[in-house]
Amino acid sequence: MASSLEWLSDGSLRIAGTTPLAAIADDPLLRERYAALAQACLHPDRPGADASISIGDDLAQRGRCPWLQRDASCLKNGGRTCPAIDGDNRELAILDGGPSWVLHPSDAAAALVALDAMLELSGPGGSRDVTAADFFVLPTERLDRETVLHDGERVQAVRLPAASAGGRQQFIAVRDASGMVLVSLAAARRTDGEVRLVLGSVSPRPYRVYNSIEEETTTGGLDEDTIEGLAERALLDAEPLSQNGFKIELAAGLLRDAIRALAAP
Image 1 (tube, rainbow, N blue to C red):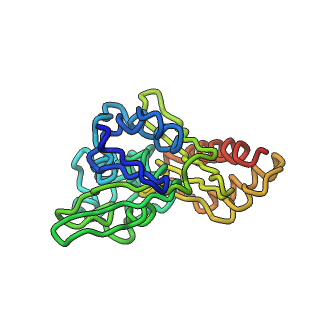
Image 2 (image 1 turned 90 degrees about the horizontal axis):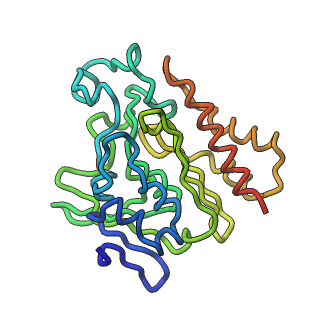
């Protein structure tokens, strides 16, 4: 398994796409340098999920939606309507939603966006690189897929830059009684002072908050009113469905805690 994690001379890390999430979570040096990713890989995002799944397959999963899993007629599988609008929508998106409110199921995805990861893709047409942030597509862009992968393409490797190593990092999640992740957050303050705040389980993609909020977090010395205001501003675009409005406060709570920690001296 050692060959799956390649530490390069410039301090960056290349993770083979076939590397299991469990191996990423268990590697001591990776846990030290890229804690947010190790923590995100530690526990799968939903009951019954398999930690032996590879990082590449984890990122390439179909969206998480109870209607899609039930093979109900919906926009994602060729139907004409989204049954979640008037039906079970508790676990679905509150940001970037419509016309489908599907979620991307990977916890690792939020951490990779927060760590400015690059993904190496390979397929019949050759190889290409895309940023983790650009790997995911919204339902407004296409309904048949959740990522930019073409037919026959796969995630060959994940590259983590040296600039994202160390600093203050964490991945935190709020789960329901069954273990399902309701809202998660990957937060990082790099050694150069830059901050990343990326929410998971609230959108069809990892949801990075406004850059202005990240920049204000770097100033430090924030009082509680300012922290509260930043968390509220990060969620101004939220449009919850009938059963998932509670996710707004869960996300705000995670953001407040992370901003407070990252802004501390």
